[in-house]
Length: 130
Image (tube, rainbow, N blue to C red; front, side):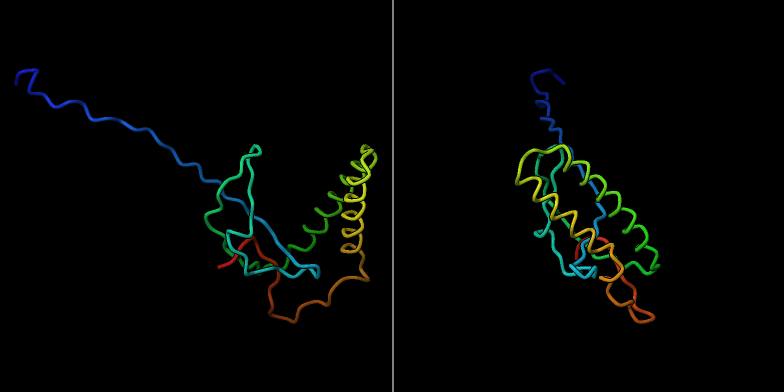
Protein backbone atom coordinates (compact mmCIF):
# COMPACT_ATOMS: atom_id res chain seq x y z
CA UNK A 1 0.00 0.00 0.00
CA UNK A 2 1.51 3.38 -0.96
CA UNK A 3 2.30 5.85 1.81
CA UNK A 4 -0.16 8.40 0.40
CA UNK A 5 -3.07 5.95 0.85
CA UNK A 6 -2.44 5.36 4.57
CA UNK A 7 -4.94 6.68 7.10
CA UNK A 8 -3.76 9.59 9.25
CA UNK A 9 -2.99 8.54 12.83
CA UNK A 10 -5.91 8.73 15.27
CA UNK A 11 -5.52 11.43 17.91
CA UNK A 12 -4.75 10.16 21.41
CA UNK A 13 -6.29 11.74 24.48
CA UNK A 14 -5.04 11.11 27.97
CA UNK A 15 -7.39 11.37 30.92
CA UNK A 16 -7.57 10.24 34.50
CA UNK A 17 -10.05 10.06 37.33
CA UNK A 18 -9.11 10.41 40.97
CA UNK A 19 -11.55 8.92 43.47
CA UNK A 20 -11.05 9.43 47.18
CA UNK A 21 -13.18 7.54 49.67
CA UNK A 22 -13.82 9.26 53.01
CA UNK A 23 -15.53 7.87 56.09
CA UNK A 24 -17.16 10.56 58.19
CA UNK A 25 -19.39 10.53 61.22
CA UNK A 26 -22.09 13.17 61.48
CA UNK A 27 -24.11 13.41 64.68
CA UNK A 28 -26.59 15.90 66.10
CA UNK A 29 -26.17 17.76 69.40
CA UNK A 30 -27.46 14.67 71.24
CA UNK A 31 -24.89 12.42 69.63
CA UNK A 32 -27.45 10.69 67.38
CA UNK A 33 -26.35 9.96 63.82
CA UNK A 34 -27.80 12.12 61.05
CA UNK A 35 -28.85 9.63 58.40
CA UNK A 36 -30.46 11.74 55.67
CA UNK A 37 -27.44 13.59 54.28
CA UNK A 38 -26.81 13.94 50.55
CA UNK A 39 -23.67 14.82 48.57
CA UNK A 40 -24.84 18.45 48.55
CA UNK A 41 -24.45 18.51 52.36
CA UNK A 42 -20.69 17.99 52.15
CA UNK A 43 -17.79 20.16 51.01
CA UNK A 44 -14.50 18.33 50.52
CA UNK A 45 -11.24 20.15 49.92
CA UNK A 46 -7.96 18.49 49.05
CA UNK A 47 -4.97 20.83 49.06
CA UNK A 48 -7.52 23.66 49.36
CA UNK A 49 -9.17 22.62 46.07
CA UNK A 50 -12.88 21.84 46.29
CA UNK A 51 -13.66 18.33 45.08
CA UNK A 52 -17.05 17.20 43.87
CA UNK A 53 -18.81 14.78 46.24
CA UNK A 54 -20.39 12.09 44.09
CA UNK A 55 -22.08 9.89 46.66
CA UNK A 56 -22.98 9.90 50.33
CA UNK A 57 -24.08 6.66 51.91
CA UNK A 58 -25.34 5.89 55.40
CA UNK A 59 -23.61 2.88 56.92
CA UNK A 60 -25.16 1.47 60.10
CA UNK A 61 -22.68 0.54 62.81
CA UNK A 62 -24.01 -2.35 64.80
CA UNK A 63 -21.11 -3.16 67.08
CA UNK A 64 -21.79 -0.46 69.67
CA UNK A 65 -18.01 -0.15 70.11
CA UNK A 66 -17.76 3.30 68.55
CA UNK A 67 -18.48 5.41 71.66
CA UNK A 68 -15.12 4.83 73.38
CA UNK A 69 -13.39 5.75 70.11
CA UNK A 70 -15.44 8.96 69.84
CA UNK A 71 -14.61 9.92 73.41
CA UNK A 72 -10.89 9.32 72.81
CA UNK A 73 -10.96 11.42 69.64
CA UNK A 74 -12.86 14.20 71.42
CA UNK A 75 -10.31 14.27 74.27
CA UNK A 76 -7.50 14.51 71.72
CA UNK A 77 -9.31 17.31 69.88
CA UNK A 78 -9.94 19.10 73.16
CA UNK A 79 -6.20 19.01 73.94
CA UNK A 80 -5.37 20.36 70.48
CA UNK A 81 -7.87 23.18 70.91
CA UNK A 82 -6.46 24.10 74.30
CA UNK A 83 -2.94 24.24 72.81
CA UNK A 84 -4.17 26.38 69.90
CA UNK A 85 -5.89 28.79 72.30
CA UNK A 86 -2.57 29.45 74.03
CA UNK A 87 -0.94 30.33 70.70
CA UNK A 88 -3.54 32.67 69.19
CA UNK A 89 -3.85 36.37 69.89
CA UNK A 90 -6.86 36.87 67.59
CA UNK A 91 -9.98 37.51 69.70
CA UNK A 92 -12.44 35.90 67.25
CA UNK A 93 -10.32 32.79 66.80
CA UNK A 94 -9.92 32.44 70.56
CA UNK A 95 -13.71 32.81 71.04
CA UNK A 96 -14.38 30.13 68.43
CA UNK A 97 -11.86 27.79 70.02
CA UNK A 98 -13.31 28.39 73.50
CA UNK A 99 -16.83 27.63 72.24
CA UNK A 100 -15.60 24.44 70.58
CA UNK A 101 -13.74 23.38 73.73
CA UNK A 102 -16.84 24.05 75.84
CA UNK A 103 -19.05 21.98 73.54
CA UNK A 104 -16.60 19.08 73.71
CA UNK A 105 -16.50 19.38 77.51
CA UNK A 106 -20.28 19.19 77.59
CA UNK A 107 -20.29 16.10 75.36
CA UNK A 108 -17.69 14.38 77.55
CA UNK A 109 -19.45 15.28 80.82
CA UNK A 110 -21.41 12.21 82.03
CA UNK A 111 -24.28 14.33 83.36
CA UNK A 112 -25.05 15.40 79.78
CA UNK A 113 -25.04 11.87 78.33
CA UNK A 114 -28.26 10.92 76.52
CA UNK A 115 -30.07 7.82 77.76
CA UNK A 116 -28.75 4.54 76.41
CA UNK A 117 -30.69 3.17 73.40
CA UNK A 118 -33.08 0.31 73.96
CA UNK A 119 -31.71 -3.18 73.36
CA UNK A 120 -31.51 -4.07 69.68
CA UNK A 121 -31.11 -0.49 68.45
CA UNK A 122 -27.77 0.10 66.79
CA UNK A 123 -26.28 3.57 66.95
CA UNK A 124 -23.68 5.44 65.04
CA UNK A 125 -22.86 5.45 61.40
CA UNK A 126 -20.54 6.78 58.79
CA UNK A 127 -21.36 9.69 56.57
CA UNK A 128 -24.16 10.31 54.23
CA UNK A 129 -27.52 8.97 53.35
CA UNK A 130 -28.92 6.18 51.31
